Image (cartoon, rainbow, N blue to C red; front, side, top):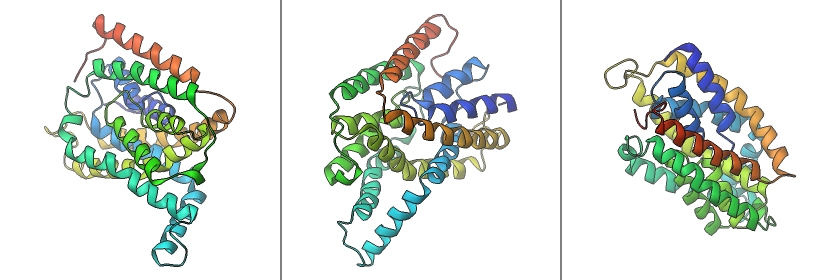
Length: 281
């Protein structure tokens, strides 16, 4: 991977990670259009650490407050029903589905069948329809203080759908939140918090795996230098996108993202059909 490609893919990752449009789909397609194969699961997971760092920085006060209440609840200093302590538990519980499924299905997820651009394009429009239905039927009356154990698990199961490229981690969890009656901003906030354990675990695992794979036969396309550059750029851009999206959702719907997903799916189908893009690596 060239340095220029890394810079472009870092920008793409940062711009799309928190929008309900699937960052993995965009990184894969743009990577090919720049003359490279699919950057791969390792590159994708590690660059996601950059955008997740943006989440940690942006929500640092919320994270410190939630973690503090959770620790106090563990020590019996505050009740486990305390709103922040409960959210702490729900982030942990909600992270279990994607963690367990990601571990159990790792080879399948990283294989050519799931990472095929035909699958990615299909998921783009399928979940555009899901997001549209969720947005139209949204009651938007619940806040994070209303989060229950059942809802936390549903959010977690929705997040696990993002193991399939094209679904979108934020798109899946936000759609679930809207179906459950949460405000758009509350659903987005919990989606971002819920992603922290999953992304840190996934990215950390890929870091460990890639320590000995850079440029080797195990992963000849992976290189640490460009990957770290892309990760840093993704983090800076991702921070700006979080701030913009939360302001946007306070007064707008997801209609533009629905339209964009359908258009993106149509473009990918066309590029696959004409041979401009290859379905797999």
